[in-house]
Each structure stands twice: as structure tokens, then as C-alpha cells.
Image (cartoon, rainbow, N blue to C red; front, side, top):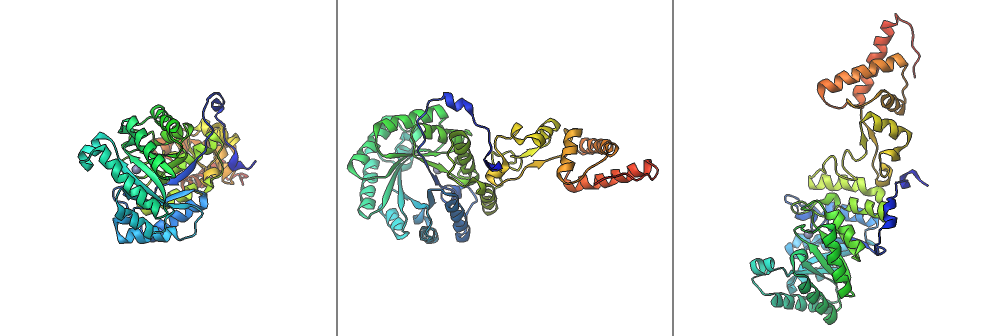
Length: 405
Ligand SMILES: [Zn+2]
């Protein structure tokens, strides 16, 4: 087994009853991710991100919202004509003009959305549920007549009465050919239990594949996405680095790694995740927090003496999965918690070796420095300290030459 494939299995999964996962990923970084305040990708940036997603094995890329502008339409069209293996999808309101824009872009799938919650019907549309469903049906029929594959998306599903959702999905499924119906937790109100319930109820009612689109307002988007998959959702929506409006969406990197280490789904090339995260971070100007799962700067960083000493013996002691699995690197940091054994291991790992006296002198120096300045020591600083310690030890030994490599 390759080192990058060694991870700890969650054996408790053997005791849990869930439907075997039958999933695909629809990444919405280029559409929902771009709706993050202050983010606007250029054509080249969108193409580069789409290309990475395609290489990784992501089944569907939501490329944009073509009716927004001529430029947006041009970019979506260019992505759709790249010959990617990923299918390309775009967003459309329940308006024929939006479908016309989608048709001009040569996309594979159009996502036609309406909201059916009381709040959105009353304050956004000023229309009744029946009127909005009628708009959706007309637009679906138009798109279908023009040969598009269709996702019928219910914005704000999680605040829509469940019987209303069932009625709308059932009618649309019976009257038209739609490939997907989509449940959107637009304001992130769901938790894993309620997500599971919602998806299960819809799953019982209809035969069309279900999509789940989670926002992270309560920090549960990834967990909710996986709960939906366990309840039978087919298409899981994600964004790279979890970018998106407000608190963002379910993170691609978290969902893919969880699918692999929890559910054994290993067909995605997760080794590209760190590079993709850096790319989206550069293009969006949004740097993931240092403790962000999978791609944060500290995701594979260890300072505590006990942890580092154990990691040097066997990385699985303090890492669920190895950094190589996501194209990352392990980082052993020297700070106030670093013990002698860990320091020795770190020094050996950079190809150096110290005598016992030198090591004792170095650990004292490290402690003083990290406690005074209250921060970690970089590799350059460490190498300077080693040189200093060697000179000082030589002096105190009255010129006696010490052997070191
Ligand atoms: Zn969204």
C-alpha cells in the first residue's frame, strides 16, 4: 500500500446502518463560490480551476450564471467547449431568457431554480406557490423542448413545508423529464439529523435523482452533505475552500477526503487538493484559516513534544490521513512544547546530528527563545542556533573537536 493510502478507518461505521452511497460531485466554486463578496474570477482563472476539477474526476462543474452578463456567458461557453470529461452545468431562473442564455453556452445541464418557502414567495416574488410552480413548469418545458438536461432546484428547501416540496417535485417528475431535483439549504439551517430526514422523505416520494446543496452558516455543511448522501442523495454540491456567500458552502476538500476515509470512495484524485486550494485562494484572495480541515496551514503541523515524538515513530498516531493523500506536507514545528526526543528527531529529519551536550544546550536555547518571544522557531533560525551551540560547546570544551554530521 502506498504511504498516501494509509489512513485510519472509522470502525464505528461498521455498526451504523446506512444506504450504500451512490454519489457524484457537482462543484459550484465557479458559480456559488464566485458569489462570495469581493470575488470575481477572470476567464483564465475560471478555466484553470475547471481544468483542475476535471483532472480530479469531478463529475459536474457548475460554470456560472450566463444571463448575468455577456462576459459570463462567454466564459461558461468556453468552459463547456473545452472537451472536459466533467459535464458542465449553469444556473437559470424560471425565465425563458435565462434558458436561452444557457442554450447559447452549449452546457449539458441547466439548473432551473425557484424558491417555494413562504418567506421567499411573499418578500421576493410576491407570488403564490401555485404561480411560481407554474413559472417553473413553463421554463422546464421550454428547456426540455430545446434538448437540455434539467435540474429542478428548490431554493430555500429547508424552510419550505415538506409537503409543498413533495408536491412540486412529484408534479414536475410526472409531467416532464428532469434528470435531477435539488434541495438547497440556502441559509444553512439544517443539521445532519434533519438533513437525513428531509432527503429520506423526498427519496421515498420520487424516482428522480436528488441533489443536496448545503451552506455553512452553522458550520455543518460538510456533515449535512454526507448525511444527505447516506439518506440517498446522488449529487453533492461543494466549493473549493468552502467559499461562497456568507459562511460559504460544503468544502470540496472535506467532502472528498471524508468520502474516502469514511466511505471508501477513492475514485477522485485527492492528491491535487492542496494545489487546487492554493489556486482558488490566490484567485479569490481568501486564505483558508490556519486550522481549516485538509488544506489549512496547520492541517499537518505538529509542535507538541509528545505528538512530534510519536509522529516520528508512526505518523498515524496523530494524523487521521497522511498529507501525501491531499498533496500536502507534514510540518514539524519547534516551539515551547517541543521535548528533547522530538527535537532530536526533527534535527535528524533535516539530515543533521548533534552530540548529547550540544542537544542539551540547544534545547535550553530553544526554550528561552520560544518562551520569550512566544512563537515558533523557523528552520533557518534552528540552523543558526545549531551553529551557535556547536561553537559554544567547542569553546567550553577548550578547543576539543566534537564529531558531528
Ligand atoms: Zn448556494
